[in-house]
Image 1 (cartoon, rainbow over the protein chains, first blue to last red):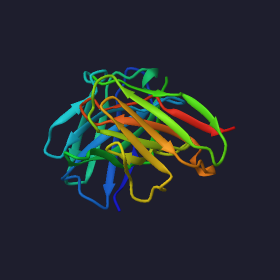
Image 2 (image 1 turned 60 degrees about the vertical axis):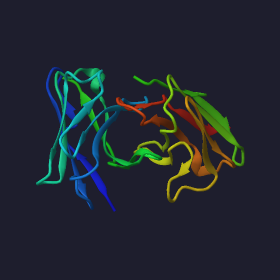
Image 3 (image 1 turned 90 degrees about the vertical axis):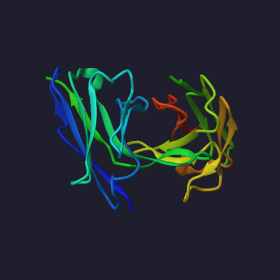
Image 4 (image 1 turned 90 degrees about the horizontal axis):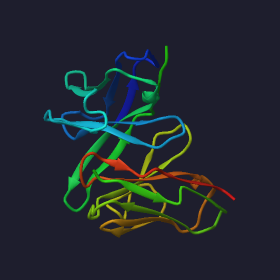
Amino acid sequence: QVQLQESGPGLVKPSETLSLTCTVSGGSISSHYWSWIRQPPGKGLEWIGYMYYRGSANYNPSLKSRVTISLDTSRNQFSLKLTSVTGADTAVYYCAREMYHDVSIGSTLDYWGQGVLVTVSS
Amino acid sequence: DVQMTQSPSSLSASVGDRVTISCRASQTINHYLNWFQQKPGKAPKLLIYATSNVQSGVPSRFSGSGSGTDFSLTISSLQAEDFATYYCQQTYSTPRSFGQGTRVDIK
């Protein structure tokens, strides 16, 4: 059973960099797409981006200038960095695995972490 | 970018009711549409993938249909554990996008 667990500071100051790590157990990150999704309090889900295990990343254009997702295959982890944060970046951040099945199914976000609340405040 | 619009934003229903939630894409996404259920304080859970395929372990009262730009999720007989927020998501293109969610609560 694949499990994902987010970790990182729960409080970040405005203008600083938000850094989170997702540790994957029960499976290797050397396959599939590794994603970050966030949810502001009381609001809906926003896709941040993903990193393909072969090294190509795809980001939401609304965040692209500030976001970096990277993989550490030696630790079976992947990470999120979001620079120049403001209060609008306060959210629960989820890591998740996106699996591509085939052309008849497409992709699914089939495993998720429990989420971590990050608050941006001075 | 593909915009996803769900309706209604919320609904009240009773146990045993048949419930249908709609999701519309701003352009064709073929059948690459997934549905998630989210309960308070929990991560979303995959219910339906590729429009109409029920994820393993999900009760058969959940079903999905549609194609192109218009999709729906139906719960045939609402149970107490189904009160939650439901999201559609397209995986036809990047950036991936979700609907704004439909909250289902008790009448």
